[in-house]
Length: 179
Image (cartoon, one colour):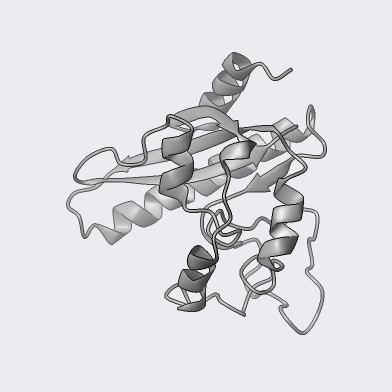
């Protein structure tokens, strides 16, 4: 049985602003989200092992997700000078990714088979080997919730965690599927 109070403390200790329990039955992988990836606004579609199509088909991702019942949602919320504060957005994203990697390593001690699903594309390597060679770090690569086809705002709503924290804020959301 998962002790969410302890997980919350571990998440806050790692640097997250908010955490919450995740019922994996609420996770829906949507083709429409994958279509947003295909629009390639982030310039990673078909260029990264952790982004579509490199991360696997929606059916393959579904097979991975359905092995789990419970998990943890984590968020980093940042204050922005204004709604166009790109520097503030990047700083918050960097904080989120650092906290995510810290908590992932911590949780692996108790949940060695966890599935970590992050925010944004994998940035472990300066240049991804996709599609010419295998991933250099297959045990450490992390796909985003969107790459898996998750509509992040809906996952938050279905698990009673806010997604929007007001004007001049940004929230980065990730999750860990644990058991």
